[in-house]
Length: 331
Image (cartoon, rainbow, N blue to C red):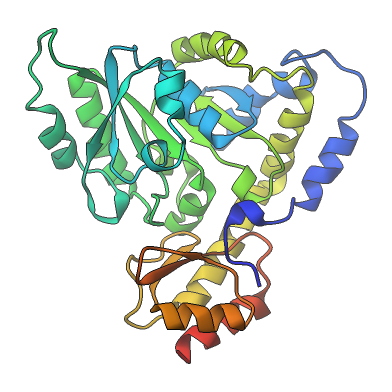
């Protein structure tokens, strides 16, 4: 029973149907009808104008978005456990031509205005020190914790005060929206750019960079091409995004994954390292306990020496979630 990652989940049937429907001649790159319709479609989701570019990976989405905000001599302020720091193989430095990541602490892998100030306030405004150019936060965080709208607003206010760009890594944005039970615009807040994740939520190979600043989008078009991410048959990426937005499939999928995680969480009395606010669970388990779970057929990742990470997905079967819950409760 698979709890390794939502990246390992199957592709949603509506995506396959959309890909088949898109398999007819149209303009190449992003000149096709489906790509052209993305701005309006996402504007309906967020209830405000935006410009949307597709990419094939979340790493590219994050780095292309940040590259529009940060010069090579600048820096991105992020959490020390942020995906751009821990899990992108140096891609931010590559895409941003050597720009620095300034790391902050924070409970649940979340930033706060105070943590950001503690990091940037000691920096002198002179040529000998790297200056912050942008802040990047993750919704939901790397530990599955969701920023409340007021928390995003507070960070956005600080970014505005200091003249910094604000980026949101939304690899599991859908799960955060489902948990918060709020409008997508409230979960995103006044960010300049959102990397809106679809692959972990039923997609095949398409993510969206949602720009709420048109000037940044204009820059990103050129950077996407230069980075080798302007795919010639872009309609097949756009088709995936449309398919998951249509009828709120993306929200239905996220709610299902979150519900499965909550089912498992009920059995983790005293074992949870972090509150379950999306579809990830970080559970204290000894080496022997993890071995026992694997012997019973559960797939998951070790998390340090004394914990395990379990991730549910849009297609996690209820019986599998219940089975894992019972297995953890019996340890």
